Image 1 (cartoon, protein in one colour):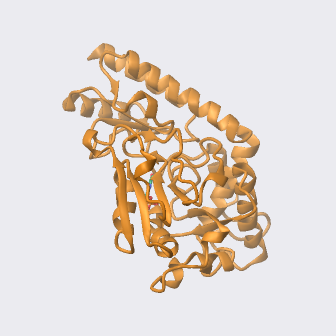
Image 2 (cartoon, protein in one colour; image 1 turned 30 degrees about the vertical axis):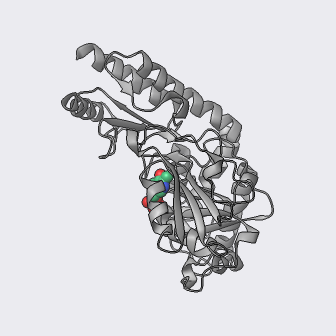
Length: 360
Ligand SMILES: *Cc1c(COP(=O)(O)O)cnc(C)c1O
């Protein structure tokens, strides 16, 4: 069967070269006579894989030395609790910008462990924009300030960061990690589920400034304490071994085939422009997000007619463009065009949309 163009929001498309290599190494990883899935995480051969994965992530993202990289499980969703448990340790207060479902979940979970304040929200217009922020509203003595950098469901992203001063900025970067360069030093914590831009589901990456580790609340479960994982180089218990191995290959692809994050950004901007330009000129389809806040990764769009939306999703799937149905809370369609989606995939989708428009 031919491979489809997969526009899934996550788990999502992976580079074909990575999948081929995983297949080639499935039964015998580099002469070990075993699959990476089968080997002990304490073995020398696996130790080299996890160390190389971290080194590559540090290189590709240019992560400063005073940040720890943790390879965890539990998804980005576990971080909604892990962050307040570890960071709410002085004033017990944190600020949140409610830009969608994930940001709201982070806010609600934090409220269980301290005082969570919603600084701004874009719920009034189905989260179709990033609200403007007034620094006067920020909690001066907050233990952290949380944003969801790219809103996977609604297709918005922060293009400028809130100026939080000494208050650590914490960002959910699940759906934009590795899509373009990010200045890590501007953040206290960044976290991401791997299944959008890094590899298979099961791996969660946390990048955390060292001084924020070690003062978790008393009630924090051992497995939810960053110190546990930091002190053990992400080997306190069995890490998500295979997902880390695939992530390592994705990072090699990013560095060696793409040429790093500046190049990745240029490709992603090109892909997004192909789709947005069409949406802005189409008489049938339209984008749902305010221009200034549009995501490079997740692009929701509608025809304005639910039946026609459903027809489009069905016909697109039959033509090999799959997972285009929008999130249930937005309706319509959403094309997630993560790193591994080739430019050609977006161009062919637009050609298909033009044809659909002409026929309907
Ligand atoms: C997918 C996603 C999540 C949820 O991730 P899990 O790994 O399923 O817990 C959280 N935040 C954002 C921005 C996401 O895109």
